Length: 315
Image (cartoon, rainbow, N blue to C red; front, side):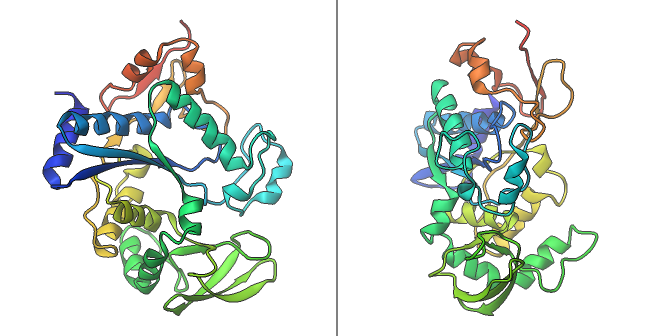
């Protein structure tokens, strides 16, 4: 039995549901390369496995485009440093062909994987937060800040500071997240930005708050009732983002987390270091399509998850 069918069977046996949810996602901080696509293809194969069992399923893909612009990757003008700290959907497209930095890289990936037969249902984290989707989960997380800190501190050498909160906030004036935040209870918070602006807001009305990564991941599982989501080994170290998100999912949002195996990296043949958009040492699905037919590309990703895949470009 193929690994995708094994995981599909585990998903169905774990929960009796009318429809199962397989999730994937990434921050569109640069080119989404063939290494990133291992997650997409892994989820896709398990999604197909669930359908083969005669069950209903949906495959969702969440663009983490409400994440901050952290650094300027190779190939982008240095002037883009002025946008560091803003959400990716508020950074202009450096190539002047899309509405934003985020949309540029999102649309490229969506077009590419459609060519190999994969069309998940896409969600934008910016839109989810702007629509108030996670307002209650933000409140729950803030009210349970001490418990979240306790979970995270179990795996830290130094405990989180006393004023740590499980949220980030984008300033209403400068649009950046260089903000110091205080929770005032219920849906109220106050903040002061490094730009000098300060305010007190109700985050139900001013939707400029997002959950920090590990809390956000667990919140998403709970909201979408996710049943399966694999992740790369960078998330799977002991006490890493997957381990802590599992605990947050259970203990903060009262949701049994999804089945989530680890997959190994993908390398270009002859290359030993991990592909990185910020370094520019990447290859894309479009480049693969110049060499392989779509069924062959999908087949390349069917290898065992614990096996590093080396993609040949010297054919």
